[in-house]
Amino acid sequence: MPWSYIPFALFPLVDINPEKVDELLEEARKGGGDVHCFWLAKENYDDAPKRETGKAHEGDAPPISRDYTSPFIGKKVEDVADWLRNKPDSTDLDLHHFAILDKTAQDGKIVICRIGGPKLKDQSDLDFMRLSALDGTQFLRGISAGMWEEAKEDYGKAKIEY
Image (tube, rainbow, N blue to C red; front, side, top):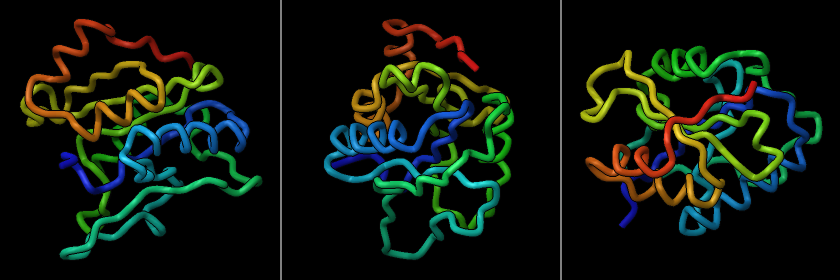
């Protein structure tokens, strides 16, 4: 059984064409047990999934709008972590894990991020790793205590390529 049934926010921090975003979302779906796990973050929370008792939400499915331009281009990972920390309680997005797209998205990579440290209690602790879209989604969907630290030993902390 997957650890999370709520979507993870996905923040493109560089200009990426919509077709590439579609490819990454589709590859992530394969790692998410045929579930679209990433919600493409918008400037505000208006069309974010809303928390409803007994209802699971999926993220965005391709194709995305060909007119899509990320409002987070030029932002830093710390900026989008703050966006997530400030989400309304009614917004149904994972509070501790999210993903960003940097320049390596062109190579099929995403950067998965964690807010909160090993016990998910230190809101100032921000950590991240670079994985393929498939592997990153599998990791987030099945994460349990201690897995992040073990994986970080293997993959190391990613250097964000803005």
